[in-house]
Length: 164
Ligand code: HEC
Image (cartoon, rainbow, N blue to C red; front, side, top):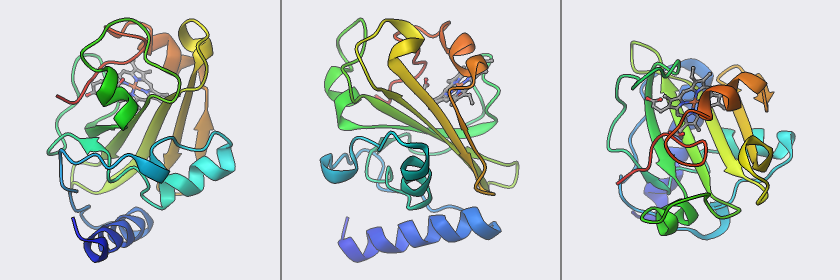
């Protein structure tokens, strides 16, 4: 994807989160790694990182889909960084730095929130993960216990979905 197009997409996302309007899909399947591969851990920086659309060069599902299983997330699309992709065919815990994003949409297809799960340490289970979300209104939530409680039922290391 060309740089100008990338910037346009990021700007589109920021606008869309602010005032509605459809979110343009990125080039699903591309995974550039690099500077935005591991999200910052401080809540303030992570919130800004989300607002900037920094995950949008990750490997993503092609399109939003209805929630799967017992997911409470509504229409959503999942993306993963290159650390997840590199470990996708393995088993057990993901390496430190592995990170997933879930984009959540309302019934009209407008983005309403972004969720980011990142493995921050090699500690077992939820203790090793940061669970974070940012709503379109800028509201953030970090490590709410109910996130990990439900994600503990996921097939691998608190993670439900690996983008193929
Ligand atoms: C009641 C169960 C449940 C709760 C509570 C829950 N999730 Fe999830 N989550 C799921 C399921 C199921 C999926 C995968 C399928 C889907 O969403 O369509 C998922 C997917 C995700 C993903 C994409 C990576 C993956 O594991 O597939 C992220 C990121 C995520 N959730 C973050 C969060 C955060 C942050 C919270 C708390 C604010 C949270 N979730 C609360 C069930 C839950």
